[in-house]
Length: 400
Image (cartoon, rainbow, N blue to C red; front, side, top):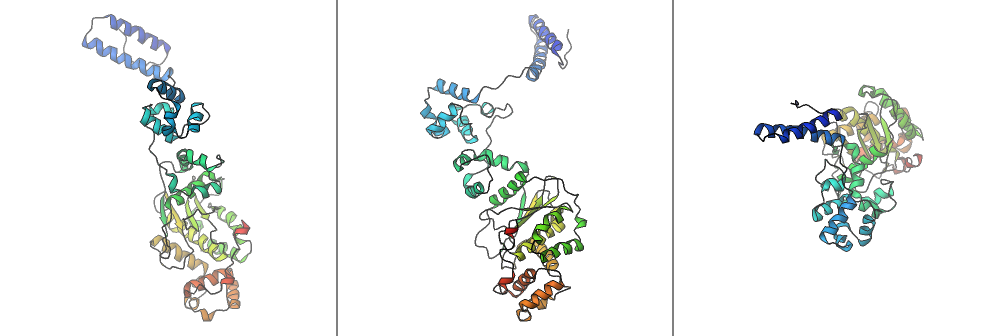
């Protein structure tokens, strides 16, 4: 009598086979049948682990079903696509897309595990990404699909491409927090915002930088950072300065209908990423957006869910912002850009108090670009026709 045990080698396996033969020759009984069932299970487990059977080839499976059902190639057009796609697939010149697999599984009952070549999958994944929900043309233009030469190719394999693009999120799609300005005519495309973030995470090389500590972002650090605004190449100094305290700095063009100036979220190593889109090519907007995002890093990024992401439209004539955290970031930026201890708010709201020469002199005293002071006066007075020539228009993008 052989005692049941996990089969660890070929000797155990052969012994179990011989023992089952002995059992099957005995007079049938409940006990014998249960013992046969037990050893059969042990043998099956050993065979699955050591003698795996390869899944049939998907194209062979399609051809087999076509033969069994008497189907012609033209009968697959509604399932696979055009006649040329059917020909390319059956001739193994075009891989099956998830959409094709879904149709083949539904219409021809070909097992999903064969189509996916994965024994663990008995269903083709449901469609997650709809082509119409994303600005594909602009994404293609900006290099979101480096392995594809034409947009029709992207459309054919859109689900696979987007699944790979979103892979940095794993199963945790970020929780976006967006500042909704009251003067915006349409809602932002949240799908575009997330794919923009995914692209940054997918295509950015996160080289090792210094360790990050929120405590390092004290007033003296922000003051030194803002002193760079006095220099014509000041924005170029930001990256190294932020990396010295463990913050990644990236510039990435926005996508249509995102109304995006800046964002902040966590990198794979849990360090903060500050991203500016340079949508509005002005010195004052660059520095306001940068300090606004650092306000999020200091006050919010590490005090909420790990997957939260802040997206900001900072270029607005509105003083209203629905989210309290956005208002806190606004207040943080305004106070550090033009400290109330150095310039009185009552003076900022009185346009008659200011001439260009006084703006330049005051900015020099507080170690800021005149563009920052001019932008703050426009904001406080509500008169956005003032000092336009002092805002540093077209003074940022050319640097990058």
